[in-house]
Image 1 (spheres, rainbow, N blue to C red):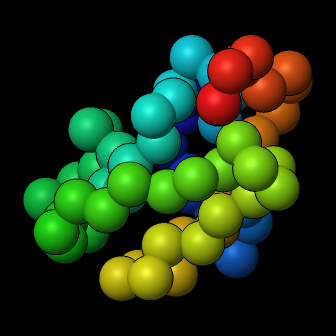
Image 2 (image 1 turned 180 degrees about the horizontal axis):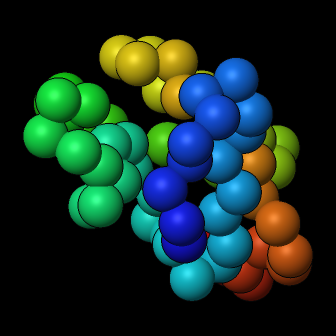
Length: 65
């Protein structure tokens, strides 16, 4: 997953990125906040309550979640 340069656009994630948490491991130090896990598998999207980053699930959701 590449860094999201345009903060107004959702960050695309795949089943490989699950369990999804924000901030992502590659987030710059200035963008760090307490880690929060986000459930993007239910609706296909999630928003971080700390920084407002929007995530959208692309591709098929994993089975059994």
